[in-house]
Length: 227
Image 1 (spheres, rainbow, N blue to C red):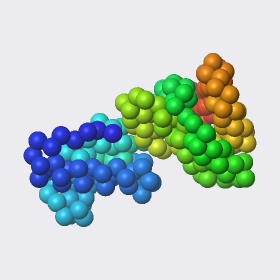
Image 2 (cartoon, helix red, strand yellow):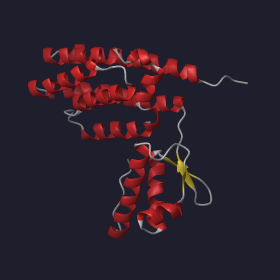
Image 3 (cartoon, rainbow, N blue to C red):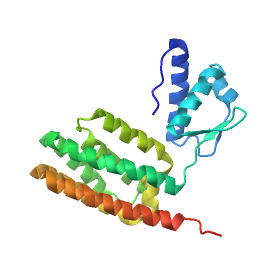
């Protein structure tokens, strides 16, 4: 996510409002991939001039969420599944590092909270959206005690770049991963409780390989054959 610069406080406030509004609508699916973003329409809806909207669109373009066209037009960006995986692969590498870095800082209370999340996962693995949200909540909690705040922000920003292919979409395409997730998460907690840092790091590395194999299989199945 781009950090806007408040050189002009009034312009910054309006630009920030336009940026956050459009970003939220893109990430929650209100604005769909490929949808046109008309400068005058957005400005009128938000009750501001076109200038801060233009600056917001430029920032969203830098984020990878908006595609800027000629003649002052813009549209919500569209990602291919392969491009999404290339970004996701980097995010997963950083996430594994963050999970391992956070491990020494967890205690009985935080581990108990994560066990509760795992039990919620185990009760229902049939619905991709619910499963994905619970899995995301688990890993967010797991990473939360990593001491490197910059690392956590980068992971969040990479997730935003692949919003079109969230874990829910991935689980739709790789249904075999759904029942595995709570088992993997429970194993992580067992290793955390045991204080087995090496075992945790080895498990996270193997898990990353398994996810990569699943993603690459999905990419191969969605590839368009050469003419």
